[in-house]
Amino acid sequence: MIVYLMAVNYECKILNPVILVPGDGGSQIEAKLNKTTANPFCYRHTEGYYNLWVNQEELFPHTITCFTDNMRLVYDKQKHVTRNSPGVETRIPGWGETQTVEWLDPEHVDDILSDGWKSTSYFSSIVNALVEWGYERNVSVRAAPYDFRKAANEFDDFYKSFKALVEETYALNNNTKVVLVGHSMGNPTTLYFLNHQLQSWKDKFIHSFITLAGVWGGSVKPLILLATGDNMGIPWLWPSQVRHQQRSMPSTAWLMPSDKFWGKDEILVEQPGRNYTVNDYEQFFIDMNFTDGWYMRQDTANLVKSLTPPGVEVHCLHGYAVPTPAKLVYTGHMWPDIYPNVTMDGGDGTVNIRSLQGCLLWQGKQQQKIYHHQIKGVGHIEILKHKDIIAYLEKILTRGLMLFWNECALQYWLISELLNIAQKYQANQPGHN
Image 1 (cartoon, rainbow, N blue to C red):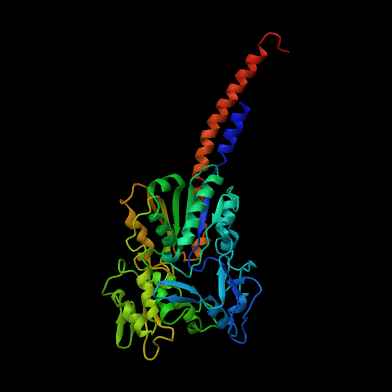
Image 2 (spheres, rainbow, N blue to C red):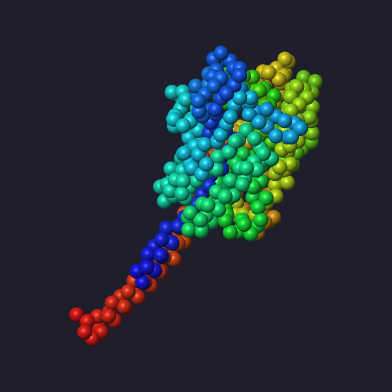
């Protein structure tokens, strides 16, 4: 009886474990250098690995070339793969652990500038909340960081490790199904994975897929990175200083607007004498003198374009009604080096609303339920800290726990009654003192 009571108590404390899948820029990257040449301000050789992303010391005018050269990728158009810059070796730290996705700066610096310009906190608010609800870091809440510079066509090793992580986490938590929580590019990355798993495997190991700010059909913003560059909100950097590195990432090409969501006549980019739609990407790259970008786009455009339903329960969460780039307008001599005039549309500030709502295409196309929840005015990164999102996660993730406790309350009552009956029976037996 006592053993059974202990077993019931253990079962009542089970939560569905969570694995976090970060988005573009949401994983730390470490580098080790052994270069033959470098800018005079830059290291050519390091004894071990150092944090490359995010490394604030390299995000200043005199060192930004160090960062961009070490961070960039080199595209092999014969093999359709990328490799690191010559003399640079990289690794993604923290596999299965939450620390490296809670904070992108290993020093946990909250604000790079004193006025709160840029925070390096990422999943920390969500993980802290999960711990308050009874989760344990690296046991029942874990993470799957990856090289966000690449796209799903180069994630074979990651996906093998990811599948093993899901199965390990399931076993580590008393054979309890896993909840996958993705952010931004982490969502199409996870969708590609789920689309390539047997339904029997998903039924056994996956409880649900919670998507935060999913980029289901691309976004106009990557076109800025490709054409002009994006200084990441760092006021002392010119966009063109980081453009070469940003262009080199297949993930940038992957996240371009999809022709499944944008019409063939919708102008995305204007420049004197030329307009570009989703049907003009090849010319777009030719006019930028960056034809490798066109090859990368062809490599990645169809990875999740069909938006095949994931085959698991989905909770699709995102913001809306935040001004979001919809069209880039270059006038005079702006093209492509001067930051364009930007026409705004609805979205979360980074991803356009039509792409964020792409998950709705799954409604009625799979047996598992699709839940959709959007919050007005919540931005692409803000969603990771917003109180309404945290409250929604608590409701979903602790729902099973409440059901367990309701069942256990009945079981405890029954066991208590049985113990009382047994004690009374024993007390009435002859010879009992």
